[in-house]
Length: 385
Image (cartoon, rainbow, N blue to C red; front, side):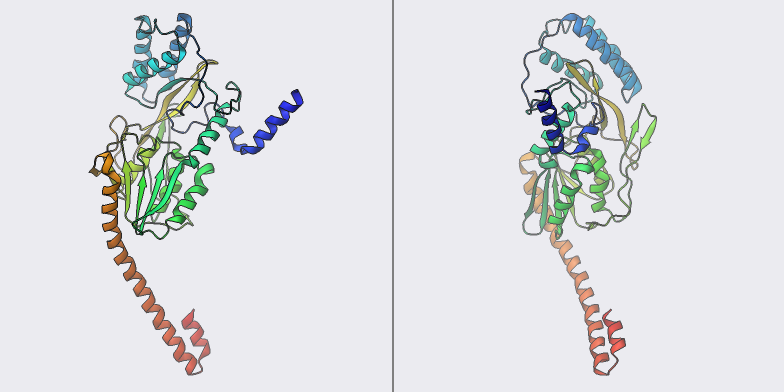
């Protein structure tokens, strides 16, 4: 029985790529405020002693780790005051306790990234206390979301459309991004739909944004309190894929647009590379790490914050405000109208450039024919080259 179990685990590990095994409880986090609960857990009860230990540990984490020290200290104190004021006394169900505490922590900090939750297995039913737990949850989520790209399409013949629901790390998503951009390679305008995008791996953005800039361009950076270090993000200088540097670009946003998706929208807006259409976004400019509280609970705490090189600020608590505010039910229709008009103008410019190239080529061909007719084959080859 033991040997068969080991074999089964090894087989499963081969099915999922070996990169998953590198992730620890903290390391696999990539700006998600939480993965959706996939499996229903049995009711877990908490008593007063549990609550005191849990809140005490969370309080200490906020004091030591939260990206804005003064706000972390305030949260650490306020949550202890809430505990002593008996606001959690009637909560014995662990799920209800996590939801209430999450609401209170978010209210104190105005930070929607914060999430206190039960440690639950995915629909595979892996050991939720084991080292495979978080990699399996991520793997299952990635499978269901098609690595974040819900749809590639063509609208009105010349408008490329991408519906992106989450950003995954370059290791997982790079090939999908390449496929998507190859699919819309001939577009005269592009619409990227971020209305359902809850964030994900900001590490993908330098690669993805490289499609839209001619040279290496600085994007928003992340400042880590613990390391006292700012990690800069730049688009790629040596980028071999086809670029869309002057193709009209439209981003669709909503109140659900959050975290890394907001970073993408914010950067392209302030760099004047895209037009944003829709509603103001969720307002999450922080990056989180995951901390285990005990064998039952874990919490996402913001440990880094975004800093845009152009504005010197970010979108935390405010959201990214679109260039064109439009009700959600007509966002796509509005974008198609604007993109169609922009595509027509861009097509004229592109066709004019093609015409110039063709004219130059015809001159060289005519010269080559004349050289051939007069026996000057060497000069004809030079003209054709």
